[in-house]
Amino acid sequence: MSLSNVILLGQIAGYTIALILSLCIIVPMSFHQEEFNGHCLLFSTGEWREEDGLFSVSWASQAYCNYVVFVGVVLFLTAAVQVYRMSMFLYRGTDSSFLSAFVDVIGSIFMSIMILAAALMVTLGFLVWCEDMTERFPSCETAAGKQIDNKDNINTSWFYIEMGTAQFGAWASWACWVGLSVFAVLKLCRYHQIENMRVSMYRERQRLINDGPSHEPVDSHRETDNKDQQMNG
Picture 1: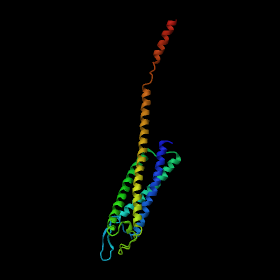
Picture 2: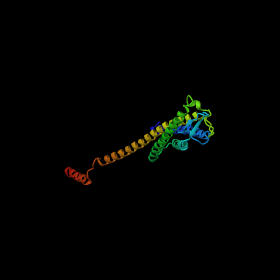
Picture 3: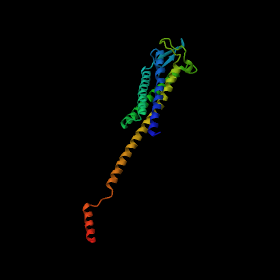
Picture 4: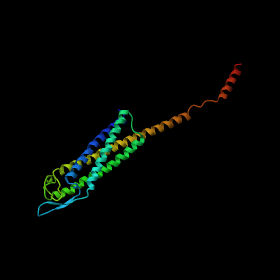
């Protein structure tokens, strides 16, 4: 199997994994916003009231959760398009062009940066929420399913699993897209190497043509033949 096929198969596998991992971000984050009545727990803080033992939440901007969901959707669509595109290349026995490989490199790096920001957002934002939960409960996990707020009508039954799944999906997606960036760079380097070989072969062919054996002029051959005839005569 040639190197190009190995890289192409690696890209197909990587984009397929990225497609699955994007669902680990979209699905739990969407359920979380529904269960929290449109609120986002990322970076949300509050205080425990002494009179009723409930949590007075100061909700952070919903843009944090919206951004994470947006990144998940972009990852899903991009991975789906790339899986189809790479599969067609493999089926036809062809590969992308140099320009297309360059675009893949830029796109993979850009997606890696986007998902890294989302992963940090989920991790740090969830940590802020859990710090307040552990003021009353032994761990953040034990706070799941407990009635901590009556005002906002939120359902805390699955928030720990949902945030944990989204966190895993985000970091695993980041690692996957970093790997896809490496594959894209390898393909681009291979194209660059092939182009350099073509240029070198062309220059070598031109050098051989220019440095080839020189032929004597036709007139000199005629003079030599005349002298030989005179001597024989």
